[in-house]
Image (cartoon, rainbow, N blue to C red; front, side, top):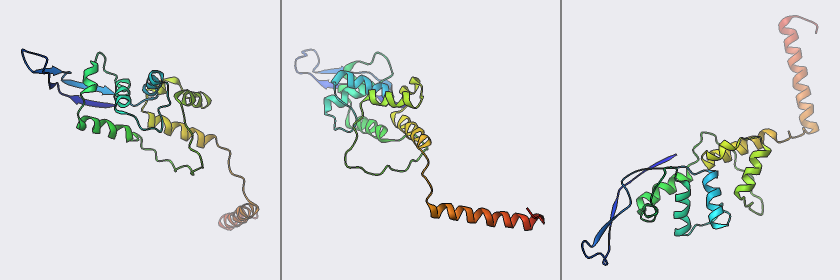
Length: 184
């Protein structure tokens, strides 16, 4: 979870005769989570897949709103985020938020595009509860990848590997017989 500290900002407004500066936003902490739930909200607003695309400024602001857990944050707060605040959010989105390091999958010709519905389907197939849609999306992807690796069929041994394993077993048996002074 990201806890972003924001400060109320002043903006120039030439239409306001009393004071040309108006206060916009709030001062406080906004909590955000980069989750499947947030991605799903964003996809329902924009009608496009979220993954693997460059977001426009408007789409990016919309996703930040979708990630926000803190209730009743005015829309102006998101529209007036400065470059430092946006950098903090971008860094958070790239962070894996997991100690698990998985091997990189081999590159294939085409890149798969996943919608949130496809990710939910993958969760159902792996018996992962829907509560996990509130997890950080990178943690959820790690869990899905680990489940996929655990359920992957084991690679068959070649004849040479079987012969090597058999040879090792005979040598280990012989060593144990000599160690225990038995005939088998």
